[in-house]
Length: 297
Ligand code: GRG
Image (cartoon, rainbow, N blue to C red; front, side):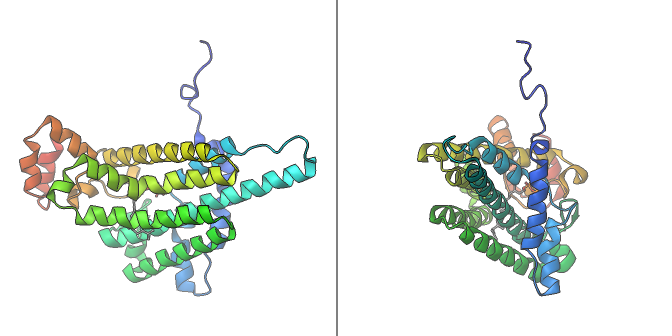
């Protein structure tokens, strides 16, 4: 009973992998160079020190890698075992890098679609260098992610992460094309959230398990862990959109509601206060209506 739980001791998960995070940061900066200066500066924009964001996904993946990496049998010569383990960790770090490149590519395209002006506390790339270069830089990052994926020579892992890109596009399209009924459906919200946010985390967790040589069953547990974590991450992100500030979020708050996107906090509030529906029906182009909706949250 004297033993404190990890939560009580407030272990900082980022600190546990800080060395590896900086290795990955350096590698990412070297992976996104281009011979064309304009493209090089656009592609490296969100990989520069100070602009790297929270690095939530690489942190989760590196922790997953250290939890699942199996030691080589004692019968194997120490030198062989050490090079085997080093190789496995390098391949898992590569998943963290690919995941971050796909993530940043999606942010670049997302900011163009939303006409956002701020990201990670600085000007969004579209704001600083324009929409055209942002779209091209996103495509460039996806291409570099594909090359890195191919180098792993594991067709199942290639297929998992290639499908994630389709999921990101699917989730974004579901969000922007939802009809009135879909916008108010929790089921639709959860499916969209899986595609937009949880798929990348769950499938990359699964890839880490597969590269560790784990069984299909363990890989499925890793997938489910990533899926639930990803869904929880987006739910919290949606709450923060209402409660956060430009400083804490690194971008403007209330962006979902201003874009007419109905997220979980509104869906839950509506269950308790059905009268909120009439406010939603008026739309949120009028700031007074945003204020009226906020009273219910
Ligand atoms: C080109 C791959 C690609 C996709 C195009 C635009 C689009 C389709 C998808 C958008 C997906 C998207 C932006 C989902 C939101 C995910 C999310 C919660 C982002 C914020 O993640 P954080 O908080 O950001 O981890 P930082 O900045 O800390 O990395």
